[in-house]
Image (cartoon, rainbow, N blue to C red; front, side, top):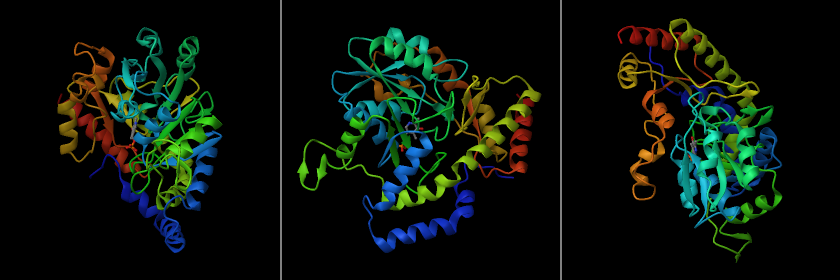
Length: 369
Ligand SMILES: *Cc1c(COP(=O)(O)O)cnc(C)c1O
């Protein structure tokens, strides 16, 4: 049995006629750029995320970049990011011209460690970019405590966390603004690139409307250096079809995750991100830590289990940062996660036979360790 890490086709098959109808409507109306379906999606996604405003953009990286541009955070400013995340968190900061300053993550959940933030703060620090990695919210109360004491903004990289909650508050409504990605493999994925920003800050929203559209509110009246970064109307129409099903899909993911967790507990004691009370993750990824990870991964793949690695390197080890950050930085927890993390296949359409086969494969591979 082949079990891919993600299966976009299985989900597409379940919604193909609704998607076709939504796309046909856009084609018939031909409002391809900022057509009415974009605003309709933005309104529903704001509602889903518990935020006042949503603005569609071209991708998640631009969402993070544009939040900072809108907040006038740029050259000479520093933004704190976790040392263990997808690279785009730091790239969004760099694209805005600001400097990403890394902070180690917690051993227990692979998320930015609020206790480590304080010592990374300098007079140039303007904001903290909290990442809800794997679909699990960062410890936002503890992060805000530090941020408030130093007058910093808190932004959410919610690219993996559509629908996750923290103390009952949905990702996208907790920070001063949040960036989402609709990359096809995300919990809410488009059929191409897409992204969005949610915020309760009307001034920020107002600036974002301008910045995503060549710095103009009114055609040919360009007020400042903006981008061409809009969510396509076709993608917005597809996303609206999928958003209506997202809560159900996320609950399937939670069900798979609890199956994995109890099955793994019977095999041994595997470190994996833990959940604090009041935090409800959406399992964009299901990650365990295993020693000899590369061998376990290769053997699982050989057996048809499409396990993967998210991510093999902490930020400070990437060639991208050579000459940008001190070369002797060390973040032991981020390094540990990068060395041992192993993602098991998880997506809403995963069948009971498939998830059982993942566990059987894991058991067999671990025994030969
Ligand atoms: C996917 C992702 C992004 C970037 O989103 P794109 O739409 O691919 O640009 C940013 N941060 C995290 C944590 C992500 O997983």
